[in-house]
Amino acid sequence: MVRRGRVRRPWYRTRAFRLGRTVAVSVVLVVGGARCAGGGEASGPARTDPQADEARADARGGHQQPTARPTARPTARPVRHAPPPRPLPRSRATALAIPYLDVDAPVMPLRLDRGRRMSAPPDDDPKLVGWYADGPSPGEQGTAVAVGHLDTMTGPAVFAGLSELKPDHLIEVRRADGRTAVYTVDAVKTYEKAHFPDREVYGARGRPELRLITCGGSYDRRTGYAGNTVVFAHLTATRERARTG
Image (cartoon, rainbow, N blue to C red; front, side):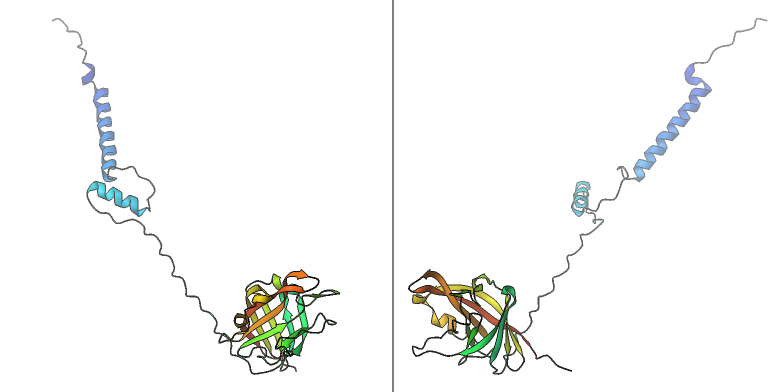
């Protein structure tokens, strides 16, 4: 009996090849199943852009709700303005203060001269303010008027810095009854004396107002200043007299 030689199997029928093929197929199935479960997109952080979500939904032929909505802006609260203060009863002015200019000056009463023009405080007291006594008192209904020198032969006077005032600056006028009328500046204007607008400056506005007047414009040694500077202000607060123990 002749012994046959051992026949060698082809490589694709060996046990090692079949085992490796089985492992490879299993890996492919697992990876493919994971991708199918993820919707065909790689996993990553969730996007919160609603426009991008809608674009992707339209590309698939459907509509998708955005994952996050923009936060609504809070509605602005309406600004409440404080009601205007009530006009004060009549009481003469005793002092006038302008905190921005470091002015705190005594007040004297003034009246019209023979030419029906406002007189001025005496030149020998440049720090004195004149109040038109026949007009409204501080805080009273109507347009009150106070005047003062810009300068004198000795130097700057009480209203030297009047043109530096700006809107919202304060003017405080103390009264004989202990109360204080607080005015807020609206505007500062300079007029030529030949074209001074009496009605605009002195006319009533339906509320307590104040005008501070001093010299202004160009200066000539013979004729003096060519114009006047006027501060327009209105009453915005009143303070009661301080209580003593």
